[in-house]
Length: 296
Image 1 (tube, one colour):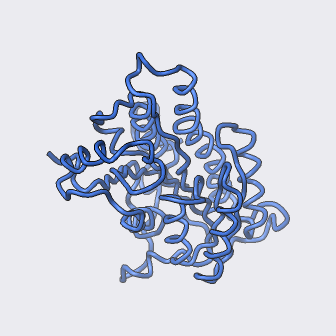
Image 2 (spheres, helix red, strand yellow):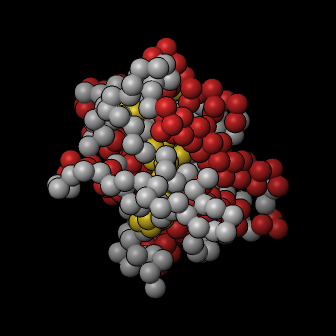
């Protein structure tokens, strides 16, 4: 256990990477990453960033099979790494656990990075006017799905740290490069920090606030074998906000110091930092990338 009954943490439970230069710390060469919710939007941008840094990447999708497979093929061609698409419903733990095992077996018996990016918006206005079944859908995907992904990934991170060997058909073979620490990254939202207006979305906001705190809690539980952090994007130009009209989007821009929505490419650096050894002393953190929305 990382903490004793009297609340004291184990000393020197982790070690710093041995490098006098910063750029090598961002390399993910030879490592395996899974990005859930990656057929388009933020997830696809993250998968591209990790692949550019040298990682082999599995991208998960729920319904967009053709789009995901085309994205995987493009990543392989562009970055010279392995990339494969898998259909996974993150609201089922058994499905998630089986999918993680399948990916790890196929990708050199290892897992280094997991990005839990699957999410759905709330589109039905005020709580008292919206259907309860949509609340169930939002929370099952945004919060339960993140929890299930974390549990399945964390079991691999812990085993790899304890045993230092590959999983599946390559079981018993030493991992190369050696496994030092896993990185779990969840996509939260600035909506986990503020209550959005003019659109009303209490269940979405609550689910994302819970994701931030889940990662903080895992950061404590996983000390020694993995780091857990979250990224909280602001308004990013993706299809998830297509339900909002231009009048609403104009109201958003009125409240953003930078005066515009962000692009998915502007999130790549935050995720790569957290995925790599550059963030070896960063755990339990939430990086807000919102054009300054939460600053005032």
